[in-house]
Length: 124
Image: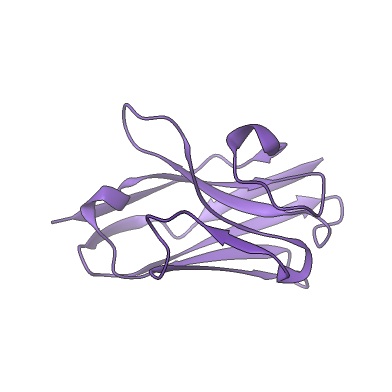
């Protein structure tokens, strides 16, 4: 089992930045592929970014490419999402997720463990 706890969400003006963190506990963290997803009101949960074992594979959704940066610190069992140039359409609950495998996934169904989510609100 892997337990995930997100932090760092909040309210920010358009053009601002936030850094989300996800603290993992439980079984070995460094061999888990990790991802960030988001869900806006009335919409399905969507892929944002993912990072593989030792950060050798990194993927971003087209909507965040060039603005968001994912990273991981296996020594501290954490994964981060640096979000710059935020837009109102980035407003959503952001979820951290982990897979049981080292391989990166980009769909909700590929992830085995989920955090409770952290709210990000971007005002115009």
